[in-house]
Structure formats: structure tokens, C-alpha cells
Amino acid sequence: MNHERGVQTRHLGPEPVEYILGFGPDHSRSSRHPEYGAVIGHELTHGFDDQGSKYDKDGRLAPWWSKQATKQFESRVACVVDQYGAYEPLPGLRVDGKLTAGENIADIGGVKEAYFAYKTWESENGAAAPVAEGFTNDQIFFIAWAQNWCFLSTEDFLGRQVETDPHSPGMFRSMGPLADLPQFAEAFECAEGTPMAPKDRCEVW
Image (tube, rainbow, N blue to C red; front, top):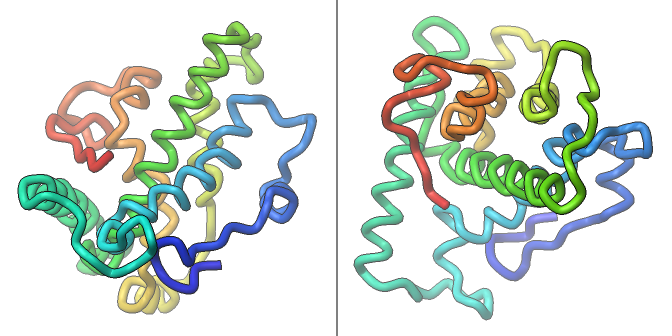
């Protein structure tokens, strides 16, 4: 439950999150991390997004970064704003990159943290046998992340969402963070310069 940014943020779990995500013994590590770990990483990253970064260690709204750090951070946030602002859920309807910046930063950070956590586990425990025929476990990781955001909606709903919701539409919550993660392009052999392997990626954290 987010009463506001900073130390006032509370997280419910792990049991409620496990219930929502279907976390259980039948899930492989390559699907648990993007489903479960990315949610945790997402919420942690909110403490350092475009709003959470304005609060100090005591939860007070106060500047605590150097001017140089703030300038570099704002430049990185601008990259994310431009990236998502170019996405069109419907022809002529663009995502509001500024409105959704905090959630997009958290999505990018969450899936990145979850991926590195998964690879750390793999290095310490050994690579598991592939869990799906025809796919590597890294590919399954990214597919599981994308499946988090499968949805159906009307055009009217998408229009209202883009105007009012600080979250990007699900299709871009799936695609956007993976386009910024070089390991996705490596896993699926995406050619440089294609939409999922852009030459200039955004990286906030």
C-alpha cells in the first residue's frame, strides 16, 4: 500500500503476493523470478524513481543528492520519458511518458533486478534443465515477464488509461523494460537497431 513515496511505503507479503501471482512448487526459477522477484524489485525501485528520489532517508521531502547526480538522473529519466512517449497503444494515441515515468522506471528496474537475481541463483546452484522444449531458461524468464501483462481491453478503456493512469498499458510494460535490457536481445538474437534491441537504451539504475 503506497500512502506516499519514501519510507511511508508499505509492502504486503509474501503470502498475498504469492497468492496473486500463483507462486508455488510447480513454478521454475526461470518463471518465479520475473513473476515474483520483479514485483519486489519494482517496489524497491520506486524509492529511487522520479518521485521517491526526492525523499531523504527519514522520509522527508528534502533534496539530498548533489547537483551533478540530480542532473545525470534527470537526463536518464528524460530518456525513459521519450522512450515510452513514442509508444502508441492505438494509432495516433501515445503513452504519456511524463505521467508514467515513475512506474516505467520501476518496471525497468524491477525486471533487471529480478534477472540478475535469477542469474546469481543459477551461478550458485547450477543451471537447471530447460523447462520448456525449444526455449532456453533465459528465454522462459522473459516470456514469463511478458505474460504478467497479457490483457484484453476496449479502445475506450485504453484511451482512458493513457489519459489518467500512471501505469503504461500492459503491452508496453512488457516490451519497454526488455528493450532496455541487453540480455533480452542476446537471448532472442535480436539484431541491433531493431525495436527490441535499440542502439541507445535507457538505463536509470
